[in-house]
Image (cartoon, rainbow, N blue to C red):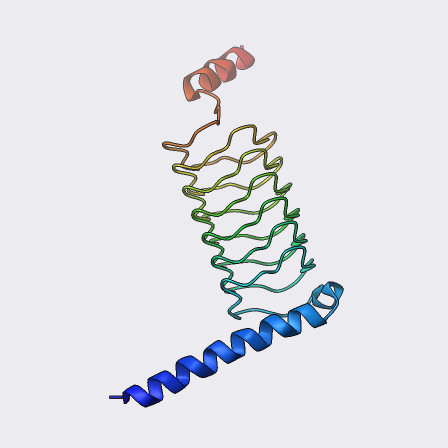
Amino acid sequence: MADDRAIEQLKSEYQRFQIYLRDCIKKFEWESFEGADLSELDFSGLDLCGVNLAGADLRYTDFSGTDLSDANLSRADLTEADLSEADLSGANLVEANLTEADLAEADLSEADLFAANLTEADVSEADLSGANLSNAKLIEADFSGADLTEAKLDGADLTHADFSDAIGVELPDEEEEEDADDNGEE
């Protein structure tokens, strides 16, 4: 069993690392992270507003509670990333891979997710008001309790997506779709 002193020292070192990382991010030009491999790192709770992570490898990265508002995450690989409670308002996530990502309770208002892949992502209780999800892959994604007021879903693949208790979303009625298919076959 570790002693209390060792645990406190470890916590102190981790806090200093977080401060160091925050200072490094402020010193570098945001462009220096474009296409970078930052997979499996912990950026939780940091202010990364406006950061450019376009095309970056961010698989399994922890962004929980992070401010990524107005960030450029286009074409980034965020497979299984933790973005729970993150601020992604106004972020560019065009063609981003968010397969199995955790976006629960995230703020994605006005975010651009055009052609993004959210297959099996957890987007429950998230704010997607005014977000662009056109042509996005939302296969088996969980949008339960999410706010999709004025969100654009044109051409999105909604196969088996869960929109239970979501607000502001109007999905085509399955019965109406079946009737339309039947009429088109005759």
